[in-house]
Image (cartoon, rainbow, N blue to C red; front, side):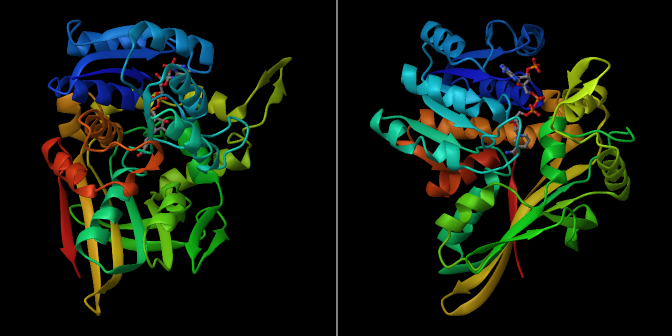
Length: 392
Ligand code: NDP
């Protein structure tokens, strides 16, 4: 029976709390800490004081984190704050000897690189301390890595190509808003695209490569090639891989808004002087946009995220599609959150559950596809994210 500390009381943090509370047989004591205590209080009021303790912490400060962890004495920390806090939280976990999990790779606030290098550098220290750091336990990264491992284990002798396909067909009724943290989201989609083929990374201009995919229960949607962090670990761990790409759907209106914001400099991440004070345009934009945590109530429609893998089984060519469909209104009914937060928060809880039940436990910094996918796939079906497989 585990004692856990969840850091970050945003859209995803809310789902993690709601789902951990539904799994009290594993999580005996749950504490939520975040920068703004009022957000923790709100979530506490939703699940009941008897189920959740709360605390205030600045997760940019290793010292504050260590003091909090020493006080709570959790078995693990679930980092559901922002990617900027990954390294400080990992450092604090090492100092206090507790396990670690996150949903997004480390990013420096001044430069968006989307790479695991700095977190993988902690591997030896986590190993020596006898601790585990599970990296990227959201949906993508996260479930998409597990889908690839499941395909590799049960369907292929060799996987040759993987396309990860992410469609959010939700409509929140605003002209423009992002479904998770605007700064992180807009940095991701305005960067150059990149995919991996025959051992090399090939760079593309943002939104340069488009295909149309027919998403089950949604229909045909324009899908654009982006770089996405799970590809970096999957190319290391999937046997025989020749190509991996990531596609995300965007509607015309979203792209027009993005282009306009980019053209006027609102997506900049460097400080500019404005009336005697310094502002970062992207951060100012994030202040103006609707809080993703507030979108839940208004969002209708579905998400569909999955992988298409092709390869060889018993000397024959094979193609499969594994995907999950999630309904925004149903997730709101259950957790007061839209499906993008839900599809991230549920896998974070499942990752923690498997770690705390010793079903996924190894020492070092580890990506999701390095574990047996079966228990995770079983939990997805039980915890609200059931999946389907189609063979072509
Ligand atoms: P939000 O912006 O809604 O929430 C982030 C929370 O972290 C806020 O409560 C914020 O506090 C808190 N926080 C930020 N900085 C600090 C700090 N220094 N100390 C303590 N708390 C802090 O983001 P989301 O919930 O949408 O996203 C959470 C994470 O999930 C992000 O890392 C995101 O990249 C990741 N994600 C992963 C996905 C996946 O599939 N793998 C998909 C979607 C998101 P405050 O309220 O004070 O601002």
